[in-house]
Length: 490
Image (cartoon, rainbow, N blue to C red):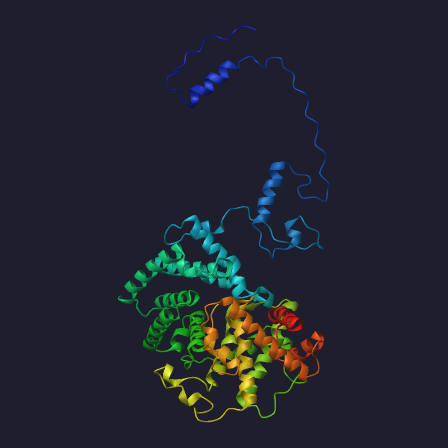
C-alpha cells in the first residue's frame, strides 16, 4: 500500500477542523478492500405489539405523539391498546412541564420543582381524588394566578414551599431559605400595591389571602390574624362579599375558609356567613346525579329534642356523606368550588350556632343576634354532643386529611374532652407524650361506650352502627380501623 502524501497542518494551535483532517489523512486507505460481515436480519415484530410495520424512527415518532395525548383520549385512537385494556399513565418524556409556561420572572430549577410538587402531590392531599374531586380546573386557576405578575408568583411560591415542606418534608417550612426569600419579596410587592391605586382590586385581595394561608401553614397564628383583620377591612371597603362574588367566586370561597379556620382557632364569631347548600343540591340534580344525594329518611332519625337548626345541619351532612360515598363510583367528578361550598355551608352554620364563642375575642358584635342562645341560656347535652360531632365531621372534610392536621384547634379539643382544664396538654413540650395521652383518653372513651352498648369486641357491629351517621368511607374507614386496633390493644 502506497504511503499517503504529506499533509501540512498548523500543529501549534489545532482547531477541531484541523484535528478532523489529521485523523482522516491518517486513516486514508486503511480499510481498502476490507470485507465486513453481513449484519443478521432483525426478527419481525409481533403484530400485536406497538410499532408493527413501522421503522424504528416512525415507531419513536408515534410514541412521542402518544405521550402528548390526554388521559381521556379514546383508546382506539391511540392505536396501541385493545378495547378491553385500561389506559394507564403515559410518560411525557418532555422534562418539567412548567418550563412551557412564561412566568413573570425566570425561575430556578428548584422553583419549578416546588410548583410541580405542589400541583401534582399536595393538591391531592388537600382535595383527595378518591372523593371524586376534579383537580384540573383547580390547578389551572393556580397557574393563572401565578402567571399574573411578579407579586402573585412570589406569594404563590412562598405558600407552595410551606405546603410542600409540611406534607412532604420535615415540617419546618418557616425556616426554608427559598421560602423566606419569596415571602420577603411578596411582602414588599404587596405593600407597594396597598399604597397605590390597585389597593382594593381583586388581585390585591387574592395576594393578602395567599399571605394569610402561608402564615397559617407556618403556624404563625398571630401574624395571620393581623393580616386577616386587614382583609376584613378591604372586603368592607369593596362593598362586601356580594360585590366580590360578582367578579371571582373562588376568591370568596377562600375568604370564607379563612374565616372559618380563624374562628375555630380563636373562638371568635364568624365574620362572613355563607350557606349555599341549596345551590349545590340544585347543581347536582341538574347534572343527573340527584339519586346519589341521599336523604336521611329510613336511615336514621335525629335525636329527640334536638334543635331544629341542628337537625337541618345533620340532614345536610348526611346528604354530603352519602353523595361522597356513592358518586365517585359512578363516574361523577366534583369541582373544587362545589366541594368547598358544601363544607363551608356546614361549617358556617355550625359556627353561627356555637354558643361557646367568646364575644370578647372580637370587636364586632353584629353577629350576636345570630346565635341561637344567649350567653346565659343552657345548652342540652344532646345539642352539645351533636354540635361537636358535626364540627369534627366538617373538620375532617376541611383541613384534616391523610392524618395530616394542617392547623391545630385546641379549643375544639377541649370541648371534645368535656373540660377546660386541658391546657397543660396543649402546651406540653413533648409531642410524643401528648400524643400518647390523647390516644389513651380517646381509646378509654371508646371502650367504655362500646361496652355500654354491648359491642365491645365486634368491629363490624361498631362500623355498621356509626356508618348510619355522617360518615365518608374514603376519609374515615382506615383511620377508624387504626383507632379500633388501639382500643383492642388497650
